[in-house]
Image (cartoon, rainbow, N blue to C red; front, side):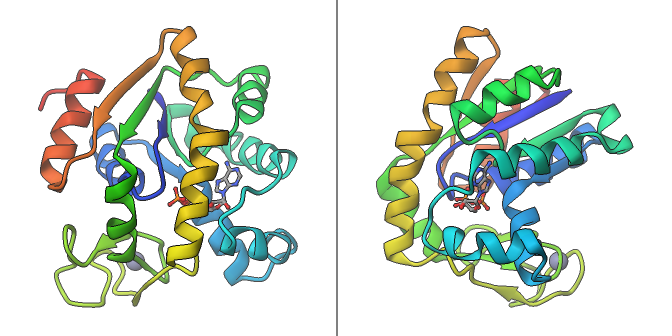
Length: 212
Ligand code: ADP
Ligand code: ZN
């Protein structure tokens, strides 16, 4: 299955992506993780995107399309993949279609704006592997440490109040229109993101027609 996850920042795409990845046996490709890795390693792309991301704006479409095409060409994607964070504009969605990549389903994870701000402030992520956590709703076994790799859990530079509001605006203006694009293709499904992780997980399974 080739799946795309859409939803506002903090909707739980990263967390549900991880769960689905295990369940479906395919990799989750997160453009956010890829870009933050590039920043950490100070690659050419990383240097160019750091300011943009920390302000909560979008990286230019051509940069993203190039990055994702390269990633999807890797052999592991042949068995299917989950895209988290791409496409994020209609232009990116069109470019993906035109590159011949077949998308089977697009899952929209719905969460109201007023919930997002509180969620993002309690969000943490592994410095090493990028795995998502939440100090309220998705705690690690050992405080401050990643369950998967033992890395330190940190707060993202773009999870601050000013940037969060801008990211929400950007989401509604630039990303949400891709839902209509995929709805027209008949492949959009939606799931409500709930307070409790397990409830969201079961909504997602239902939406995708998996066993709950
Ligand atoms: P979130 O969904 O929590 O906002 P992500 O980790 O998916 O965060 O992305 C973080 C930032 O990386 C975005 O705010 C944006 O600046 C940049 N980014 C990620 N994916 C894309 C994309 N497809 N197009 C443009 N910018 C992107
Ligand atoms: Zn980790």
